[in-house]
Image (cartoon, rainbow, N blue to C red):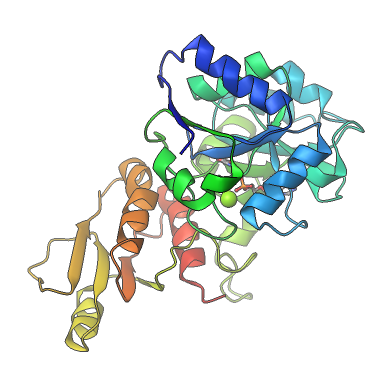
Amino acid sequence: MNLLPVSATDPEAGIIDRAADSLRAGRLVAFPTETVYGLGANALDAEAVGRIFAAKGRPATNPLIVHVDSIVAARQLAAEWPTLAQPLVERFWPGPLTLVVPKAEQVPAAVTAGGPTVALRMPAHPVALALLRVAKVPVAAPSANRSSLLSPTHAEHVGRDLEEHVDLILDAGPCPGGIESTVLDVTVSPPRLLRPGLLTAEAIENAVGPIDRARFTPQPHRPAPSPGLQGRHYAPVTPLETVEGDSQERVFQLLESGQRVGWLSLRPTTLSGEGLRLVAMPADSANYSGQLYAVLHALDDAGLDRIVVELPPDSPEWLAIRDRLHRASRSE
Ligand code: TXA
Ligand code: MG
């Protein structure tokens, strides 16, 4: 496997040079960010971008996030810089906030799925930033996993999914955040939350005022809005189900019926048994998101019949995690 170890805090110049050369040559490089590992290609090279879609098995209709090393670089990719974009990037970049803005001419249609907007983000991980600075090109990078499956938080996850498609995997150990960036559309007013993520909606509202998060707020007139927008996503291969509240009864039932069960629990239990893989998840959202995908990857490898996840509380700091769990539990 072309996995190259690199320091997460002080990336070695020789390694970054090699990865940057690969990107400029039109090849694919997987790299760590503060959220999850990304599968990168030169965003201005439509052919290289095409390789991302092929490697992931991603529908051409799903646009990519373009990563940049500065606010100046971001503005060059935008046809127009919406009023709220500037205070947002000054406050939250580098970091896990992706802004959707009108795209500049030079951004290939392949990146934006033919649409008029482009999603931009300046990542905070030292390896990602060093790579962007040395490559001197914007880098289109979705999460480095096969389409609709679990995002990778360790370099090994990338290797398992995409080994033969990627030129190089920069291995800087686990991603600290563990869950994807928040995607916010600032072409509309008020800005619209498209994907809850590592940066909370509250933090954004504290900085720039109310945003439209209707899609992720249960409404009396509309049935369950959030989970379904794009169907099954962020999902392990093993069927996953979520339980609101105490999940012990459900796990007990499944074990009784002879199933092998992975269980992400949030409260103490005395339940045990041969068919049970119990994972006691952290009670705070930051630690929970840091571990979630790695735990699901591990359970996926354990040959289980089912994964049961006790949902964390329906409160703001858990919004992104609940969104991912709901999507992972959909059958299609
Ligand atoms: O944390 C992250 O955002 C990671 C790291 C690698 O940066 N990237 C990531 O990319 O999660 P991906 O491709 O797995 O998810 C990007 C999301 C998708 O839901 C996509 O539909 C949305 O952003 N998106 C991209 N461009 C868009 C656009 N122009 N308009 C609306 N949504 C867009
Ligand atoms: Mg993804």
